Length: 297
Image (cartoon, rainbow, N blue to C red; front, side, top):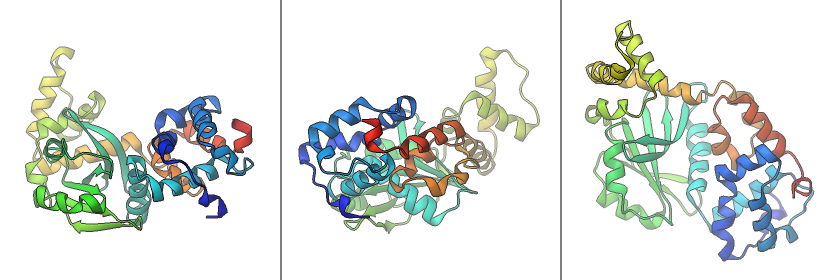
């Protein structure tokens, strides 16, 4: 935290600046050592005239994130605070993993923490509508044991009275702390294994079937999906969920990320955690984050 956090950006540029943390922009830095979008927005908004161009990209993004905390709390801001304050603040990377944008039916869960159980966080920021929330929550209740909605203080009351009592409600306060309004209740008995199965990749459900039954069905490829889905649906729900959580944790295992966690800028924790165990991408991202702004514009 220093004087650079006092930068001022015209409000009309806030949505554009908020996209600095989008995968497409950050991946562009990783692949090309620059981002034309980033450069254009910085020039048009006058940001380059307000900062010391000798600071690193990582430091710059921390500055921008701090600015967004005060002025434009978009979905990424929520995700990154969940990653820092809940995943790293209350759990351990040795036992917990995250998944983002995880598809359940026609919906995508914003943020999932997997450890001994599965907990989903659906984000409804100040700029989001509640129009699809009922359908989203209904989907998540068929796949995860604990379901939460995290929202802003202006939406907290609406969430509290409109959502079922088993749904947890969190508020991202005006001080950027995460406050628990209502704790979630276990949703285990309502999980629909046929729905959860369809969110798995082929290699994942084959591993689960083999672990539980001790074999993989010897059937043509055209029938392997339907046969495995039937077998999966017949596993006792508590055991099926536990096996599934263990498999899903492997998608984004943190054995590699633990080596680098202390080098990750605060603003980029959610993004880099989502790179999982891809050591090459993590190292490349950290390398570009250490470069000076003047070297990449």
